[in-house]
Image 1 (tube, rainbow over the protein chains, first blue to last red):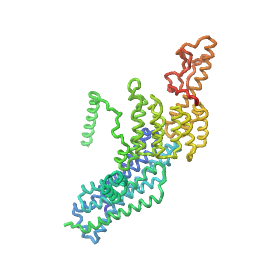
Image 2: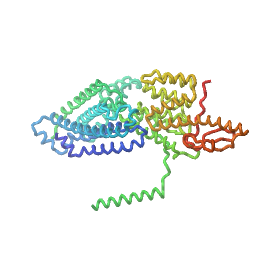
Image 3: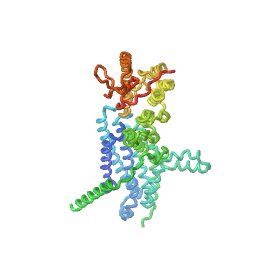
Image 4: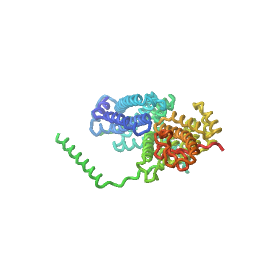
Length: 259
Length: 294
């Protein structure tokens, strides 16, 4: 809860005001620019903004979870308390996940409010929409975005247990970009002359987080069905990957000498 | 309070300076016809998962390019620049970034195929774009009809058009009238009734005001062609009775009443006694007279 309270103190939720202004402004302006694609664009914008804003919170707060405590020297009072070191790491992670959950939930409500308004305003042309304005399938995209953000938070926390904040941010963003593009590595062996190079690329493919799998935004916006099995398997993959990051993070933090 | 006033004064001064600079030393206008990135696949990677949003940006750019040229704001004298050089690349990028961007394919089908000055005059690119859409969504009967429509209306290849309509009629959710349209096109390709039927279908399935407007304009053009045929008969009869064709450049009058086209512009008669649309009409020029199958 301390991380969550700290996030509120750090005015993290100011991004929600910006999100609301962005969506409201876009809903007004887009109608005059998009030749009938207003609803699609608001959905694209709302879903992408939820992901981008969440990403910035996950990275920039995630990298400071441990290093801030060390810098402020508050880590000593924390370590003196009757809690295990792994509990500190997991508690900090849970606090940031709670911050992200509240953030995503409020953005979801704001997005649906804007979509309800647009649906009401554009009701006469609803026949041509690929998906309804208040499509519940949007929740699938938002849910997977949330799992993806939890994974990025775990990455940031993992790097912050043994690295400086700047390097942690660079590594987390690097892994995020590589994870989004990891599908390109899958068939690298077909374009590489060296078979060893192909095998390395394949190994990297399996090690990197498959963040592209969490992106079903285009599918839900176009009214394409995202099966429950896909949701469950992707979320399951996310949970396992998060655990695989938190375990070494707690081990490194437990062994770290803060003297 | 003093700070607020100081900021206000400084901002106002900066705005005045900007205004002065714009008036006294404007920079040469930037050439808008530039596309810095032409590879959709490279762009897709650069957007790291936010490609749908990037597609929206390119879509807005495509319609701005089209609207700007069409309204003639960026047109060179004589309309030389009204050939929409970026329309296909922009729509191609849009549909690479978001392969399910339905309206981009359908918009391209109409406005890439339409001859200059109304469109790019490139039916080949319109078909290429629609075929790209079909590779993504092979069951999309609307794209198949649109390909047939380009063959029918702009290329006057009725046999090819009939083939596409027939193919569309066998796709899931295709309307039942498509089979009949394929047969009609093959039997009487190019007649105005089937042309009208096709434009009406396009108007009803259009999910965009511009497409709807284009279909309505084409329907008015077909109406004008019917009216011209009727007026021609009247003018020919009058010329026969008077022994000479009416004087050229005159508007058509019947019983002292000026006959106007569906947009309210009077029809004209040339020196040879041919009735035609006034050049000020927004329906001008009329499409080529549909020809029957040879």
